[in-house]
Length: 150
Image (tube, rainbow, N blue to C red; front, side, top):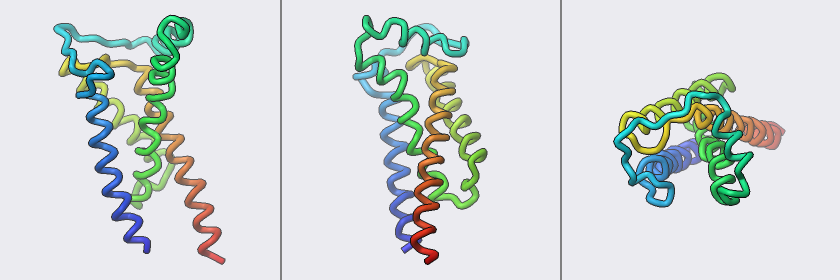
């Protein structure tokens, strides 16, 4: 049973990475097909978060939610599934570091290919998402263990 869960999780993880790549690099809905001639970036911590909170009425509810919560929830599956498919990554700090590293890689690709905006706030929120995903895994794993150890 355990190997079936790991196999299914690996397939779901690959599908998740493919979908994430689509939304981060190719989605027309989020302006990813617009390639800029300039490098666009934000290196000021929480600058964009504050801007989206301050101007939430002007930018609209969907843009506000997607920018603030989308970055968090987009990386929660990463933090949840990684410890399932990799026993070496069952520690909170491993998953946190890998979430940070993965997010930084995504942001650097966006910067280099001038698709989207390199945003330090996204890195922070994506890492928090990975941490939340790991905490959900940890709770689910403890519940699973409590039922299977009795």
